[in-house]
Length: 479
Image 1: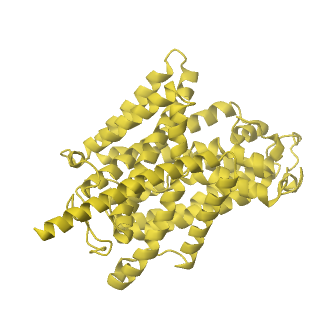
Image 2: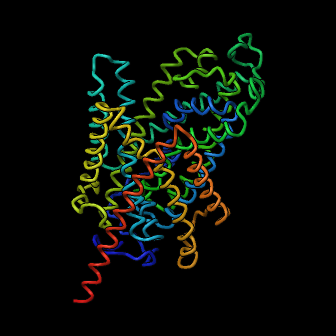
Image 3: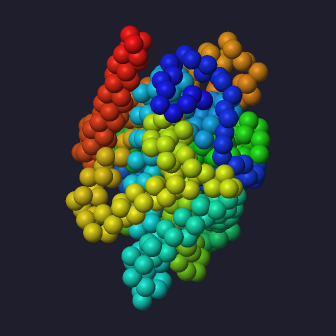
């Protein structure tokens, strides 16, 4: 890694060994469960209802498409991270593949995305906790959560790993239990919906009530727009890999074990939801999981799912705080953020980077509590489509770095992207299609425009930095 403040050409020692100053401590089980649980969040448990409303049973196809795209991105990330583990993950890869401007841009965009979304997660968890204990104001719950997870992230990295391990375990167990109960209802072992007599539900709801595609393929495409961003979060496992005991093998195993299971959990649970009940039975504002569990007769289904969503929100908060602190530390390491953030604790934890991330997270929370429909809404819109921009840069970086790795160090390709380069190009094309569809969607268009503006601003700053550095370099050569 080059020293802070120096300019590294895109082709300069792209495969150099990392001298990672952060302490290890994450075990294989931490990374495996982080890979599984990182994308299982409130977006699945609550937000999936919006996708069912526009796609009907076709939401299964929507999740297959969105999940396949997410799996491709995770495989690309896994390939690069196994070959070149780094705490900055895809930001470091983008710098090596495309130049300093790319690493700067994707790193800062991703950091901004995490600290803004962190406010949504903290506020959502506080709303649930306030419902359980109305005597404690919502802001106090937010403060408690932020302090607890700040403390966990300031301590040894294994604390983060343990939190995420048990959070992910609970989420995975909840989905497995849901799948088992749903299958029992489908085959008549448990009553569900109108079939209270215990007759098998069968597959009539998949083709009844308007057919499998009640809104046609346009509904499936709208469903993709509604669910694709629920897969965000898979990137953190490759950031965490740099702090594992064996980065190369750990990230390869985590990616391999996660990609198929994530698709199974998402698509499987959607298939259960639209099979057990008619898709028209879903109600706005109520988790489809709760609706299905209620129909099966699970007592206190709403309370159970509230607990699961609560855990999912805290898990995402913890992961986002970790990911944002490591990303800004990596930026500082490469001279793209203040050098003061490089200071480490005796245990190798970047405490100033953690505090910088949580400080901005607190600002986001205050804006969300005070001005949720104005200032914070604009901030949230400005990161709405950033995930797709980040994914696109990941794919472009993988296209370029794969050729270099094959040429310079093929032994590092312990994990390979499927059907390279065709599937990488197909994933890029799919991202372009999603962005194009967002332009035509009235609900998604503001997010795309605000996100494009934020991305343009970061790219402009990156370009200005490059131009200034080139002037400094030319001046120093003439002296």
